[in-house]
Image 1 (cartoon, rainbow, N blue to C red):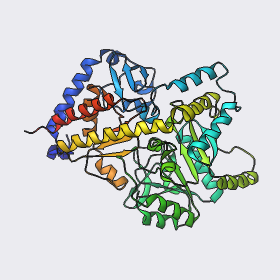
Image 2: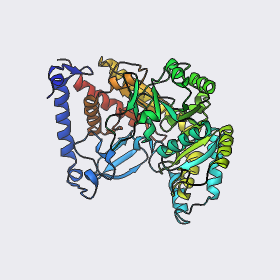
Image 3: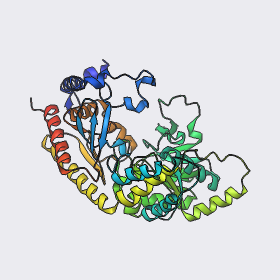
Image 4: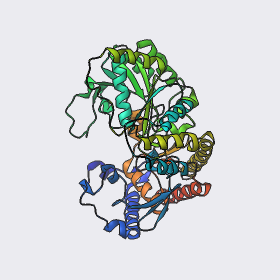
Length: 459
C-alpha cells in the first residue's frame, strides 16, 4: 500500500475502509453468481479476450454474453441485466433493432462485400444529408479511421502539418490525438504501446473552453484543423461554456484552419447530433459507433467548399496510394444497416423518447446524490448521462482528470451490476435507448441509491 493510500481518509467523500470492504463484498457476490463465466477460458486469445478493452470492466473476470435484445443483456449464467452501456454507444438505439436486423438478413442473401455501390448506398447518402446536413460523404469502418482520413484531407487542403486537440480528448486510436499537456507543453500521453514518434510534431494541445489558448496556438499559422467533440466525453463529461463552440468556428475561419466536429459520442444529443440541434457549422463532420445500429460503420463528410478544395488538390497530386480507405469499408451490409437506422430507427420521435428518459434518469441520480450529501454531480448531453464522483461542473480536461476516481467508480459499477444494472466501464456513462423502459430507469435509480446508502452510511 502506498503512503498516499495509507494517509487517505476518504476517496470522493467515501471512507476508504468502507469503500474497500464494499468492493470485497461485491466481488464475492459477483463470483458466487457467475460460475459459468468464471469457468470460461479463452487461452487462444491474448490476455484471454478477443479485444483487450474487454478486460477493462471492473469485474474479477468478464461475464460472457449469451444474447441481447432491446435494452437487456443476458449472460451465460442466466442473469438478465438492464443495459445502459449499450456497447459503449455502439448499440445506443437498442440491441438488434428490428429494421436493422431485417435489412442485414435481406442483404446477406445478396452478397456481403464487392467494393461497388448499391441502391441502398445511394439512398443512404441522401439520408445522411437529410439527417446531418450538407456534406459530401465517405464511409469508413470505425470513427478512428474516419478521423484519420479527415485529418489527411485537412492537411492536404491547408498545406499545414498540425492538428489542435483538447487536453483529455478522445478521438479513437488516432496517433495525432494521443497527446496531453505537461507544464504547458504538448507531449505524448503516457502508456502508449510501442510509440516512438514525437507526436508534438503532429499536434498541439489546448484546454477545452479556453478560447484565448486556442487563439494563441492558431496564431502560429501551422494548424490545419481543430478536431473536437462538441462535448468532451470518454472522460468525466465536460460541457461547453456559452459561446465556446461559436468561438471555435470564428477562430478557425480567421486563422485559415478547418473545424472538424467528431460526434461519435454526442449523437446522443438529438436527431442530427449536437451540431444540428445547436446549429454548429463544422467544415468536416465525423460520426461513428451507432450510426448503423451497431454494425461497424462510420461516416465522414466535407462541406461542399472543402470538397471542392480537395478536388483541386487531388487532381494535382502525384499518382500513388492516398493513405486513405480500407477494403471492407462501404460494404453493402453497412449501407443496409445505415439506411435502416437513419430512416426507421434514429428518428426524431426516438430521440424525443431517449431525451425524456435520460432527463428522468439524470434527475433521479442527482436527487440520490443530494439526499446522501455526496460531493458528486450529474452531467447529461441528450440521452447520455454520467454521474461524476466530484463536485461540478467541470471546465476542461485537467478538471476531468482530477475528478476521475477509478477506485470509487469501479466499486459503484460492480455494485450496480450485481443489482441488475449494467453501465459502461468507462467514466460511469449511461445511455437511454428508445426501447429503455421507465421501469428500467427507475430500477437503476433505486440500485444507485442502494449503493450510495452503503458508501455514505451514517456512522
